[in-house]
Length: 210
Image: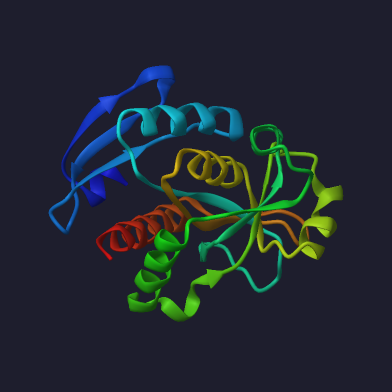
């Protein structure tokens, strides 16, 4: 994403093997793209440290597993709510399983406006996701997640939303469906994944410009 979306990106971080780049976005503003690693604990550390050095608008972009038949491989998903089924966001906020953690309204509006302006706006889904610590062996939880309203499952949004609320900064989330988890497991191929990643990055950059 940094190589394709930023002008002259510079690697400014490689601590813990989590690469981060800063460069100039299409609107002329500086933008940083930082890996958080997998799961809530890693995302919590990176989010906290980004805020400590001045980050005030945090937009998670990444992959998710589609839980419903109306989601297809490569499709983009905007989410305003993450259902907490992970240990990190629950520990930080003190709430129970499947509590709803929200994106900040300002960044969510910007994402939705960027999606509305996108040529692919009719194909961008919008709805809750669930955040979990489990990458494998979670199939028995899928029906409960769907019943709670989740379109898809991922691992970091609830933690990032929770920390942003505690620290008083903006947070949002846009994802791409890399796997579908209904009717067994289907994985996106590498070419389609890279094209979807670029579309996701373009949506994120457009949201910041809004």
